[in-house]
Length: 335
Image 1: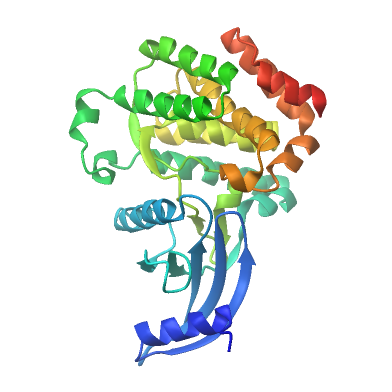
Image 2: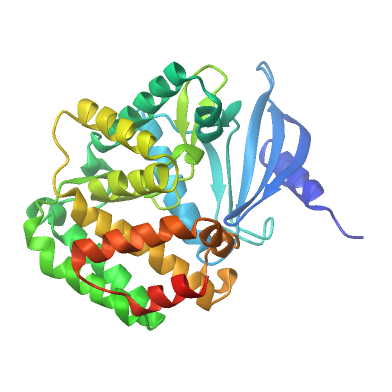
């Protein structure tokens, strides 16, 4: 007899929490990085609590789980608003995939809330969003890495590691134009005074929940790292501004600078880095199947819908670096 996924989840929860009543086990969604079930747990002498069981799927699932679980644990200890982590399991034989259990928060993603908000409420939410990103970058980054000393002594190591990562990736897929961009980043990094910070690397309004009690809580920490804070700022402006609403981007940056209490310098350098990341992912998604390269299946369709914006980003990249990327030009011309 075949056991359904919901039954397997129920059996596992009953074995881990024998003194508790497990109910309302439901499959919620299946996405690029995870499969999500929800359930309710009631322990003796306590109120029922709602949780999410998130099974990690695809390439690098175990590494993503380790990174997210570490982030949630450390960020909660630091008082930063994230869902609480109940447990994690690395053993894929238990439910077929590595997984974690986190609290389920009532509310909605911030992006649709922003899109439907009145102008005054929208301004308030964007201000809070920008301040929330600044709050992340003001945490003591050294508590989030096991070996902070090398980065204290030589912070530019963080840029070296990032550039090396992208160079290896683009070499793997023979993207010579993008390799030239990593060379540009390497040749200009001496202009940058690196400031380490805890970074999310995908900080946008669909990864922030507006909870029913009006809290903003940040989710999806699979790219959590310690790096220069402007990697986050530039990516947020790219997604929320260029791909979202330019006025949103301006308001977010103003709120960020106001809360961060210092100007954000040399942002163009990091615009090159994050634009390169986005556009290279686009090229790879057209050349290979999304599953093969670990990208969301809808990536290619999104780039077709937003082709004019991608062309603008490509032009800005060319203006900032003086470089033309043949692989990118080919994709943009064909679509």
